[in-house]
Length: 289
Image (cartoon, rainbow, N blue to C red; front, side):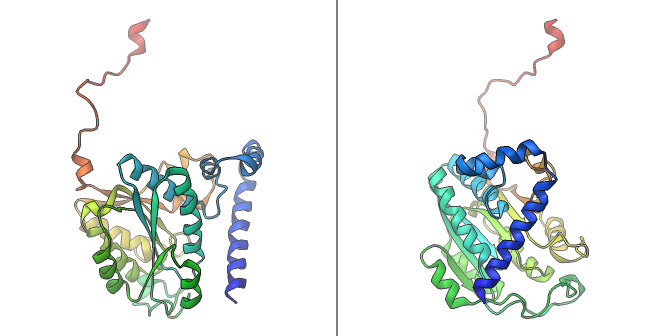
């Protein structure tokens, strides 16, 4: 049953990618064919040729940032593991990112292990999700990820405390995938982002899975949780990167609209001088006439 579910999920993902590609420029799709056959991993990430491109983009960017900051390891987290297809994909992507950057990536997954809890009210979108949705075959998943990722099973409030006792600023968090559906559960996840600034890269990538359906809005679900978090935090901000799509070759992919940046404004990095004493001068072409 889990194998069939995995195949159906992969088929749905590839179908979506195929449909998105049809609306892109022909020459980019032609180039993509050759990149798929002969390109490097970085090239395939650039051309959205890696399954679940939001994983590939975010993990690679986080590893590059970690390397630039002098780290040898970073951590990536997924909240809402369910049957584990996302976590398994993160493992595969992380292996390729490590081969590309040399950065070791520690992977952690968080889930109740029993499916979704009971919704609190309309803010949890019970029209979409309900108690017991997305259960986990824990034994099978733990067997498949053994030695590659660590699971934290139980209520988010409890598993976050357990994780925080074992993590370290030597392996900062660089990417977090949030797929817990509910507003209430997302609020519990966002407690993580109030912790010691050194536990994160100065710019941490977040993927919010549940913001794309018609009934999602900023007065319920993950969008409301983001809004309330930002209103309550003076030195932490979760913001949608409006210009990410402009930097991508393929403009019609949904995932670019689900990537948010976590800005750690009280991170020591934000107080470092990043340049020498030479003054910057803008060139004025009119003076060179």
